[in-house]
Image (cartoon, rainbow, N blue to C red):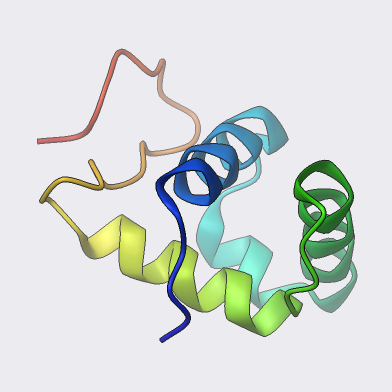
Length: 82
């Protein structure tokens, strides 16, 4: 897995929440996945592929440790899912 800096993790979570598109649909929609990666790379100055970002988003969704996981889209976000 690609090592993400804390800032990249925060940027990725922020963009995912702002995007307001469920992760399961995002990873299965090639156009949405590419647009998401292009936007992330533009904002952060990175050069990551859509597959790398979606893989890390899936990791974050399953994570309950210091990364804080990902909120469920469609529900009001009030902090990390626990």
